[in-house]
View 1 (tube, rainbow, N blue to C red):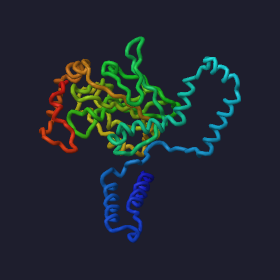
View 2 (view 1 turned 180 degrees about the vertical axis):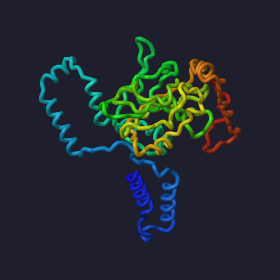
View 3 (view 1 turned 135 degrees about the vertical axis):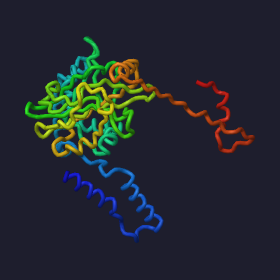
View 4 (view 1 turned 45 degrees about the vertical axis):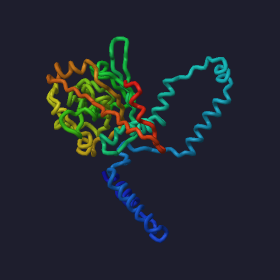
Length: 334
């Protein structure tokens, strides 16, 4: 908390640090002041604040030295060159993925989540590096598994049952897992839907955690497009008492599942730290109707979008530097 305050103050100072008036014309100087004002009040103060686990950045010199050492070793191994020329070289993808998860992967995940506005909508712009990479998969049937990466599409039918989740952890560590839908709350505009809440997970044994809210299948209403479903992993400072967050199990009341991730984090920020994020996109299918009728026991909402009619400019005899859009009325309509 103290670190965030210091970062906010330093950001404020940098925003109001203006050059001397004498080196700018009056109009340019006023515009500069206006831009600084817009930067300050058009975005949240938490934008760009790192709320994740502490990092130990390695110097660029050491990285380049390590990379050069590996390249030198590969170039001086004639067996690898021979196998590559004969198209028999086998790349160990498991080792490559494990190396990616420990090096550049967490930074790539942060950038992808930022591109999908995950941090903006859930943490008011504050972000973190996903040092705990989660391996998430849904068992569709005996022969089919649907993995969850960072933005891939998963249907509601494929996500009917709780997924299998694994991540690296020691047995003496405790974790909290959330599954959030920031796009599908039917009662409050700026709230989220809570689809799963498991706390006090010992190690990586999600099944042994304390279920505060049972798993609920995604149910994006018809006509609302793709919804984001975000898995958030928090590292706890030991075992916690989260009885205030307990829902009645099974929880079938959407009002009880209304959730605010930012308020939850603010409440427990001294004892939990964001450590991992994964998410998928989901849109309506026929199983959503069953969820509304038989699980939530309510009527299914349905939305339609009626696009406005195409505007066609009136025809003129001598159009000057204007596109001839009035010919669009003769084009076939989809």
